[in-house]
Amino acid sequence: MTGDGDDGDLHDILGRALAALSAAATPAEVDAVRARYLGRGDGELTLLRRRIGSIADPDARRQLGISVNEAWRRLEDDVVARRAALERQRRVAAEADEALDLTWPPPPLRRGHLHPVTRMSREIRRVFTQLGYLVVSGPEVEYDRYNFTLVNMPPGHPARDTQDTFYIDAARLLRTQTSPVQVRAMLALGVPLRVIVPGKVFRRDNDPTHSPVFHQVEGLLVDEGVTVGDLKGTLEYLARSIFGPERAIRLRPHHFPYTEPSLEVDVSCMVCGGDGCRTCRHSGWIEVLGSGMVHPRVLSNAGVDPGRYTGFAFGFGIERAAQLAYGIDDVRLLYENDVRLVRQG
Ligand code: DAH
Image (cartoon, rainbow, N blue to C red; front, side, top):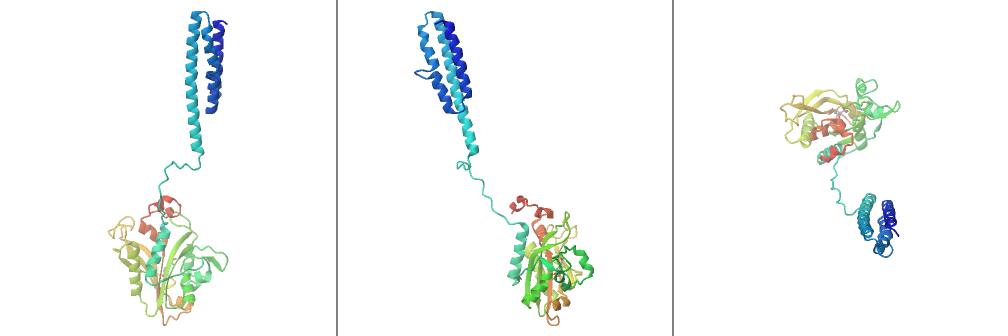
C-alpha cells in the first residue's frame, strides 16, 4: 500500500461523504452519513485512519495523518452544520403548516360596534318609545295607491315626478317614502295613535350624494285637539335627544301634499353651534326634516274623521341624521362596508 494510494482513498472518501451530506434531506439521513464515514467501528474514514500506523515511510505517514485529521474535522463540521440547517428548515415548515399553534399570542380582542345607520335608528326608536309611540312597519313593495294617491298625491300630481320611482308594474312600486305607512297605521290601528316607522325607501338616484336605497323614519300622531305647538315641542325634544341638548329648532313654511300647513325643520348647527361653518354653509342652521299637520284628506283616506281629529306627521332620512350626529361627511362611507368606520364606535 503506497502513500499515494491512501491519499487517493482519502479524496474519494471525502468527496463521497460531502456529496452524501448535501444530498441528505433529513437529520436522520445526516446521522446515517456520519455513521457510514465517521462511525466508531467501521466508518470509512475511521478505517483509513486506523491504517495510518501501518505506513512504513515516516513522512508519508505524517502527511496522511495530517490530511486524514483535516478531512475528519471538515466532515464533522459539515455534519453538524447540515444537521442544524435541516432542523431549522423542518421547524419553519412545521410552524407554517401548523393550523393551531397554541404558543402564539392571541389576536387583540375587538369590540363589536353598530353601524351608524343602525345606531341612529335605535336612538330614534328609543326617543319615541319613551314618548309612548309604537314602532310599526309597512311593506317595501308598496302599491302606488298607498305610496302616492292616499297621501294626497293622485295620478298626475306634479310631486310624483320628484320621487324617481322604481315601478314594478302600473300598480306596484318600491316605496319612495315611509309616508304610506301613515295611512296603513291609521287603517290598522285606528285613532288616537302615535307611531314611528323606520324603514328602507328606494329612489332611482345613484350618485355621490344619493344611494338608491336609504332609510327614513316617519312619525305620526293623531288625536283630538293636536296642534302645531305639539308638533314643535316634539321636534324640539327629538332634535335635542339626537343632536345634543343645546340644539334649537327653526320652522319654515314649505309644501308637502300630505300636510297642511307644511313645515321644514332646521336644527341649529351641531358642528359650530350656530356661529356658521362649512357644514351649515355659514347659516348656523341645518335642514333636517319635513313635517306638518296631517292633511284632512289623508285623515279621511284612512277612515279618520278630520272634523274630530287632527294630527302631525314628520319624516326624515336616517343616513343624513347619522352623518350629522356622528360627523360623517361622505354618505358613501356608510355603504362601503369599511370596518374602520364602525370601529371608531
Ligand atoms: N315623505 C317626505 C320625503 O320623503 C318626508 C316627509 C315630509 C314626511 C313631511 C312627512 C312630512 O311625514 O310631514 O321627503
